[in-house]
Image (tube, rainbow, N blue to C red; front, top):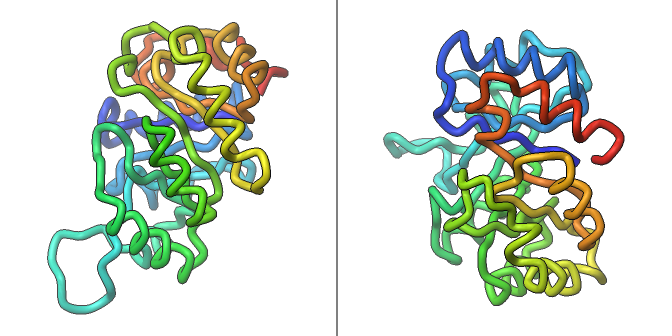
Length: 212
């Protein structure tokens, strides 16, 4: 499984241009695009591409301002969302509320975590997937699969008796990192800059063909 978080590396037309390039080289990827580009991205991609939001808020329909609620994401065509990324952390009570709200509207949820203790708590919420990451390694080119192997193995072990998909991310920069993630027990990787901030994103996408 390959999840590509566009973050804010791309905006407007550049989001769709990159999404279409990903579709050419790896059309089973999950892409998480900025909320403003969700509708246009979904409309212009084929059925194999899965489009996620980069965040969701737990607030309800009705009175409220400035929150991205699950109903808005569904309306834009998103089939899932990432929450609790290292660059957008939320507290456990908020995570629980957000998971509940997303479940109500049928959104798949990938929850990020850099703490094994937190992973044990998140497991009880039964999300679609949990992505184990290291904030210090993000966008460094130093892969979590090399620098936190012991913790990744523990992470996978925590989830082994569940149906939650174990993912890892941070510093993933090549096909070898993707291979190592599988060796360590993960089912895929969460990446960003190696694709979203690259002049040659197809290089990485070709490298992971047949691996993820």
